[in-house]
Image 1: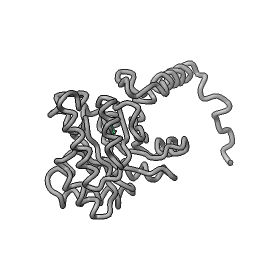
Image 2 (image 1 turned 90 degrees about the horizontal axis):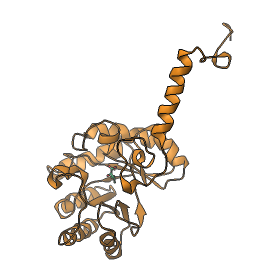
Image 3 (image 1 turned 60 degrees about the vertical axis):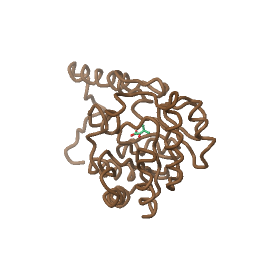
Image 4 (image 1 turned 45 degrees about the vertical axis):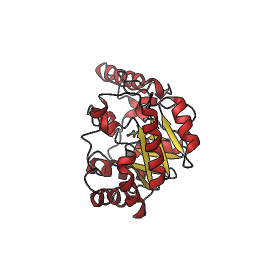
Length: 249
Ligand code: KIV
């Protein structure tokens, strides 16, 4: 699984054969330039999800429910999940939390919407965690295990395990019957998810270790734009090949 936030990215990752696309609320960081996912709105997610589902020809699309869209009450949560399905065209939604959102997940599943859970480090709670911190060390491990079990009990079809020790994600993956999808959680999960911009190196100032190194697109883009600027400045572009000479055809 990998994230995508627009039509073109969805076309490309779909063509690469990715089984599943996450329209992550990491959109707030990598597309909108916020310093967390907290400000992302349902409208932001609906717009991005609709663009992604227009580009994804075969991948299964999961849309993130943003902060504030499911925390207040269950009818609001169901209504917002329905919007992501009807207006965004998603095939499922993802929301963060464990025992605290068990009833919310159950209600959304009962409305006929497949739900993916997300436990461990949950970015929407960054201010409660006090920053990007590995979760589930020491006695906190049991809390993460219980959260994952609650998500499964609620009827989720899968769960993201984020930023936790590899031996903990291994234990959770063994205990759960639904597939676990890891990010910064080691090699023992059933699948992996990455933020597209991180794995492709689109932001030279932020390259999390767990994202691996699958490209340096920042370098490629900066180099291409520098050459374009230089060519236009020196009168090298556009040339014959890029010009139209006839006024009648
Ligand atoms: O929003 C996102 O990209 C996510 C991943 C970190 C799993 O939730």
